[in-house]
Amino acid sequence: EPEVTQTPSHQVTQMGQEVILRCVPISNHLYFYWYRQILGQKVEFLVSFYNNEISEKSEIFDDQFSVERPDGSNFTLKIRSTKLEDSAMYFCASSMEAVSNKGTQYFGPGTRLTVL
Amino acid sequence: AQSVTQPDIHITVSEGASLELRCNYSYGATPYLFWYVQSPGQGLQLLLKYFSGDTLVQGIKGFEAEFKRSQSSFNLRKPSVHWSDAAEYFCAGAKAAGNKLTFGGGTRVLVKP
Image: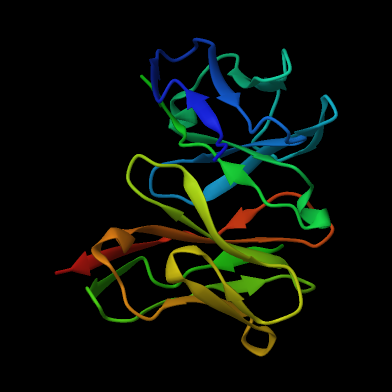
C-alpha cells in the first residue's frame, strides 16, 4: 500500500541553524501539507500546497518557513533560522483531492525536530 | 473559530471490553470529520471519515463512529478491544469549503490484559 515517507525521523539542530525536512508524498497525489505537534499540544496545520504554490497557510507559517516541491517526488519544509519553540514533531500529508472535494489526507510518520 | 475537542486525555480499558472515545466539534456548518490513530513510532493512520449521508460510519480495524448533529459529536466506538488497539486516537474536522484539518487534543488508550 502506498504511503507517505519522511526523512529524517529525528533531527537535532542548534538554534539559529537552517533545517530542511523532507517528505515523499504518495505518488499520484496532488495536494501536500505540513502539520506540527509541539509536545503536549494539538496537531496544528501549517501549510497546504497545490499546483506548485501555497494554497493556504496558518499564522504559524511566517517568513521563517518555506515549502518547495523541487522535483516530481519530494516535498520539503525549510525553517531558515530555528528557534527553541520550533521543537516539535512535523508531519507531512498528501491527498488526491482537496478536503472540500471529499479528499482524504494521508500522513507520514513524522520528523521529530529538536532545537537546542 | 472552528474547533474539535476530545474530552478524555487517557482511557484505560480491559482487553475484550468495549471502547468509546468522545469527540465534539464546533463549526458554523456541518464539518467533514475524521478519526486517526497513531501507534508508537507510526504516522497518523486514517480509521474512518464522515462527509455526509449515513450517520453511522464503518472504518478499519472494527471501528465505527456515529455523527450526531444535535450533540455536535462524532464518537468512535469498538465493541471489543484488542491489545493492539493501544494507541493515541485523534479526531479531526474540516470545513466543507476548506482543506485544512483541525485536530482534537487526542485520547491515549491503554489496554489492560
